[in-house]
Length: 284
Length: 277
Image (cartoon, rainbow over all chains, first blue to last red; front, side, top):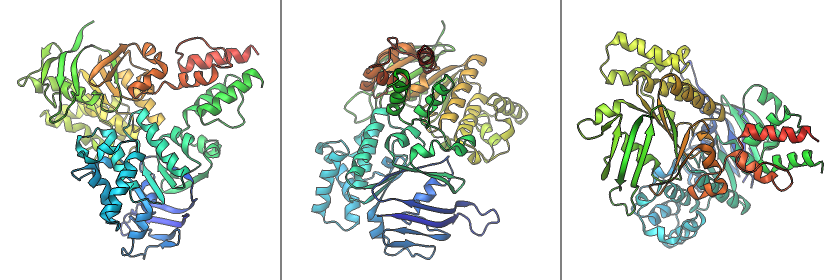
């Protein structure tokens, strides 16, 4: 399902003289089946942007096309269920939204809300719990007896249970330890390989470099850059104006350039950086 | 070295939990030290800070702060010596302006207005945020917000500052500024810093790292000793530092010294190899 933003503006307070533009004339295409990262400082409009994709927010002007669905300022709130079933949204600290007495019931809530039978929902719970790296024994436990990391997985499983085509993630690994973070990010990469479209909001540039195929940079409500991560992280204009921060490997490579190394383009992952350094030292 | 916090045989189990969150833990923290407490989610890091700050009460064992064993009667006295900076700067603001926000802790102490103004100015000066004192905290960047949060804590003149994952939501620049600021304040104001983190890069400025696992201390050493654990760090939910990861990708064909090198040291090594070509 391709997602297209055309001249989308979102004003938070239309009638105020200081109308606050959450989004300012954004035109953007999010391609089907790709892993797209959306970056920008706190308050830049990233969350406002993704909330338009499942019509939690509607544009003040402009249109958003999701597959064959078109959302404009006039779109009414009826019949949004099919869209929301297709677009799964994992909010920040999703574990705070767990509420049922067992993990199973919590995971079943989404599919049943979208019309699945109890049997189907139970079957879905059994499948997704394993997908997020927990075994079936967790299904009968109370979500509140689990650790923070396990609760996060259960909350993600709840979103996956409705089998959405597109999954939007708002800082899904905030607060997780590095090993847990890697596991969760690999899970989303796997889902993408299996055909899902992934949209990730993040502050972590290493996650962008390691997992994303495409990225978009939002600054004060405007889309200021989009493209392959390697291209965007090498965009001199953005770097000069401090509009992006670099992944660790690119930062280190910049230091090496002052020590006589040469990079046509800054490498953005450790593997790329390692390969480049070896190449330059060994001359192979 | 003078002990500022002394923890002896501490135990704590959450109600209805099967496993102890803190398991017979003993630890001495020295005055003016920067100690990092690391470990995976659920290792007991946050529980330990809640116990130190008296937010929860231990099942057994003792905690002394500045020579006094904490009990019900003196907990408020002890808490005045400790300031906490939390993870999410957005959850810490109560004031409409930066200076109101810094004032909050002082108002709670019932400080007279005139003295309060002085203290606020002093605290904002220390974190280099004086120019922002009339601003709405929500208009600041993440790093600036955390500096204001630090000012709020400094205004109450604590001896100990606990940083509870307080740079984890900042971008790299914001993180660097906050960490360097904390380091400078530690030296100038004779503060003791306890930082709780699972980001190994954040521990670089500390003098000692304690690794927790299932409520126990499993390692206690200088940063270099802990970084030398390499991939073993993953057992504790942690990653090796960036320089170590890069070195392992290079080792097969590039001759590098054994053991841990900091990023600067690694850069120097690579520069030497490059100039000898």
